[in-house]
Image 1 (cartoon, rainbow, N blue to C red):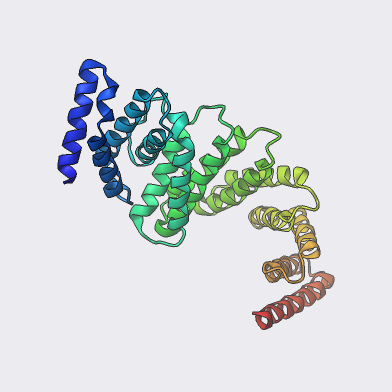
Image 2 (image 1 turned 90 degrees about the vertical axis):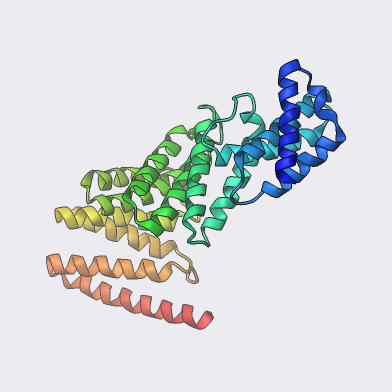
Length: 324
């Protein structure tokens, strides 16, 4: 039935192209065949040739109805959106504005399913979907930064499964681009900076390249300057900044960087709510940095504070376990 339906639609479209008469698509029997084809191929491994045919058929029906067939437009968009995220060949430019929102919804669904799956095909589909969406967007599209960030997320999740350095490197590039294209007044720009800082730190550890650690520090400096003091993300950003500085402190044996790390982590602990799930980690990190400071200087005040912080971390962990 599927092959027969596809043949009938293709025959109709051949005639439309030949005589430029889109009214040929208004045959009710052909509409039923189009609906059946879409239903049969709306899955995780769609046949792009079939969906492209269905999309063109509904688009021509929309034109034949003088733009008064919203159902036809909806079906065309649904079919073409799947072509957008699953096919290597780009859609005609005039179709892209119509399908981007639907394509982003589909790609978001892939990303969410990827988060709970180790299926390599699903991971590849999610990464490719966001690559294609970002590539199709006009340079001035206001949500391009969001698409780039979603590409970064997809690449990082695939990297977590495969350990492929190229994915991490591309994630860094996507994160940089997201920050670059986000308008200065975009309320999400600071979030993109935070994500970039985290991703750069991952890449600096993978590549063992000091330049990436230096870039991460510069990014965290920007975050510290623009993130509001009352932001719920401030403690996490302070923690990230501290990790970047500690990485450099270990490499360069810089007491200045270590002292700044300690100051940042003290503040993170201070502003973190007592019942926050990350509080134990912030305390443990602070204790580690204080112990390092004692090891380098033999100043017992740092050891005393480190012991006190470790005790607080143990108590916080115990309290968290009792509340579960």
